[in-house]
Image (cartoon, helix red, strand yellow):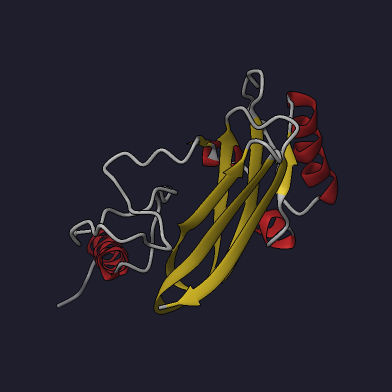
Length: 193
């Protein structure tokens, strides 16, 4: 039996479709953003104090997720900034971060800056973490806010799942409320699983 160009073209399309389906079903490709929320636990709440924050259906850590501000930053630019904590207190500082990334010429196209309105007391805090695996997420381990000493300490754990050979970069960007003038620290511990 002789295949015509049309049937050969259809066979190629079918092969590509099957290959892509297998990749997506395997779970090693994730196209949607990963939330910074701590996953809900099925464990019953204990009366004894825990060193970890107990997740609720809507955890309120005193911040707003701001990962959307960094969606336009390319992998290469984020990779060069792994582990560096950014404390951004106004729109001018945010625009300067975008400009620095543009000047690095690590991204193929110029960054189209996202903008937010900084309300009185708002501070944008963020970093990128990296590792190797299938997926990764930041889990909140501890938050300490000392209003008298004007300090905020956030402890995160970067959890990496799977043995995929992918280099992963996970953003953690949040807007802290009423944090103007505070000494803000963010620490990330890694633990592959």
